[in-house]
Image 1: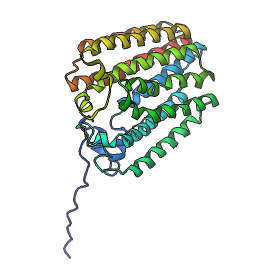
Image 2 (image 1 turned 135 degrees about the vertical axis):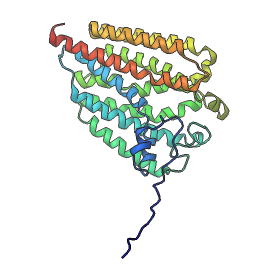
Image 3 (image 1 turned 90 degrees about the vertical axis):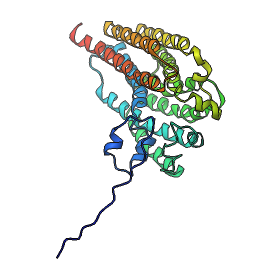
Image 4 (image 1 turned 30 degrees about the vertical axis):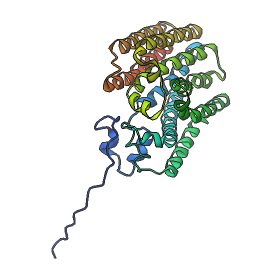
Length: 322
C-alpha cells in the first residue's frame, strides 16, 4: 500500500518587531504560540531587564561591603535576577495594555502583540498576573522589610504608563520606578535602609533619566504627532548638555554611596571606568540617528557589569586580604 504523503504547512510566526534584534532567540527557537508572550514581557529584548537588575545587585553587594562580608550572596543575586526579569515582563505587559491605542499609531510599536491583535487585553492581564506571582514567590524569600519595600514599588509601576501623557519628565518617573531595587538590595542584607543606599538610588534615578532620554529620541517625531511627552522632546538639541548634568550627578551620587558604605579600591576603579563609559556615550551620541541612540542605550549594560564586578571584587578583596 502506497504511503500517504501530506504537506503540513509551516507554523505561522508573527512578524518581527522593529526594535528587536535580528535573529534573536525568540524568533529563532520559540514556538509560534509563545512568541507574542515572549515579546509582551520583552524576553527577546533583555536590555531593560538587566538595567532593572543591576541596581538590585549593586545595593546588595555594597551592603555586604559595608558590613564586612567576604563572599557575595549568590542566592540573593539569583532571586533578584528572577524577580527583575519577571517583574520587568509584568511591567512591560501592563504598560502595553495601557498604551495599546498609542502603540498602534507609532511605527516602532505598531507590531507589538496587543495593538497587532496577537494577544487580547484579557490574555495580557492574565499573563501579567502570572508573572507577578512568580515575582512574589521570589520576593517572599527575603526578610519582612524587603517584602514590604518591594511590594511598595507596585504603586510607581501602576503610575508610570500615564506619566508620558501629563508631564515632560516621564523619564524621572521611570527612574523612580525602575531603580527601586537600589533600595531593596540593601534591606535584603541589612534589614533596614541606610544613607548609602539612598544615595545609590538617587544616582540610579539620574542615570535612568539620561539613558532613557537617549532611548526616547528614537520615537520623538511620533510622540510629538500623537501628543505624548518625553525628556527627548523637552531637551531637544540641548540633550547632550542635559546628559552631562544627569550622568555627572549619577557619578557624584554613586561616589557618595561608596564613601558612606566604606567601599575600597575595586569599587572606585569600577566607578571611574563607568564614568569614562558614560562620557563616551555623550561624545559619540547622534540624536538624529535612531540606530546610534539604541546602541548607546543598550551600552548601559556595560556600566551595570562594571559596577557589579567592582563591588563583588570589593567583597572578595577582604577575603584575600587585598
